[in-house]
Length: 105
Image (tube, rainbow, N blue to C red; front, top):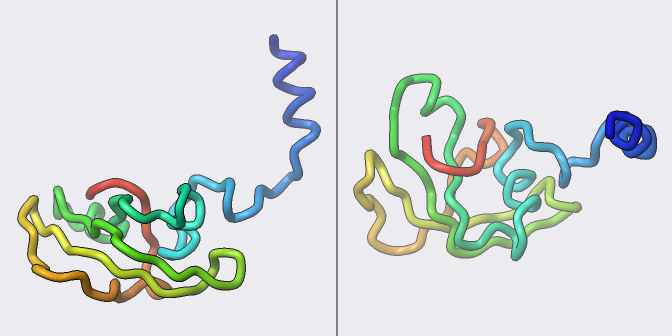
C-alpha cells in the first residue's frame, strides 16, 4: 500500500496547481476549486475565525471567474452569526484582499 502511495505521489508535480490546493487563498481561487464555479457554496474570511467570530459566511449565488480562477467577480448573501444580513444578492467585497476558505467560520 505504501509503495502505491509513493508511486502516485511521484507522478504529481511538487507544487499543486491552485485548483487542487486546499489551503486558504483568495476568494476566486477557493471558488474555482468547487464545481459550477462555487455557486451555492459557503465561504468565509479566515480572519473571522481568528477573531473568534463564529457561524458567519457568504452563501455564493453567482460568479464570473477569469484568469484560471485567480480573478473575477462573485455575488452572494451574507450570514452573520447565523442570521441573514443581506436581503438581496450583493457583490462580495475583500475577495483579493483577504484569505478565504470554504464553509462557515
